[in-house]
Image 1 (cartoon, one colour):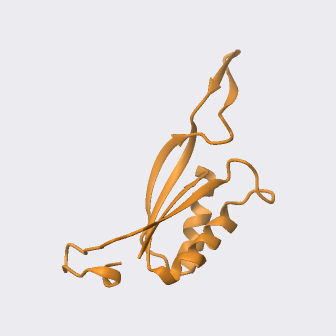
Image 2 (cartoon, rainbow, N blue to C red):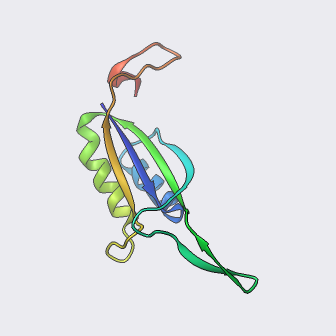
Image 3 (cartoon, rainbow, N blue to C red):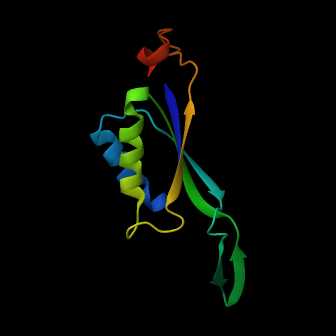
Length: 114
């Protein structure tokens, strides 16, 4: 089992949710986060004053999946998040091992709990 953690642009959330649903991925946790990578923020104007936005809004997705689903999920998220052929700030996907999963309601464990 694997845990997919993806950081994407907020405006891409609906399209990612839809394409994940299309490939039968049902369980996704979403958190609004702020951060920066190579973008290193940007400047904005507010009431005539310029200020630096160092932490950009992002959305963090967490998806627990079976080993067989990893490549399909990565490809699906990547395709849905690329803007104009891919730009800095499109996001990142991390894959980590998931040692154990337990469904509290039924005490099922392992892939059956997903």
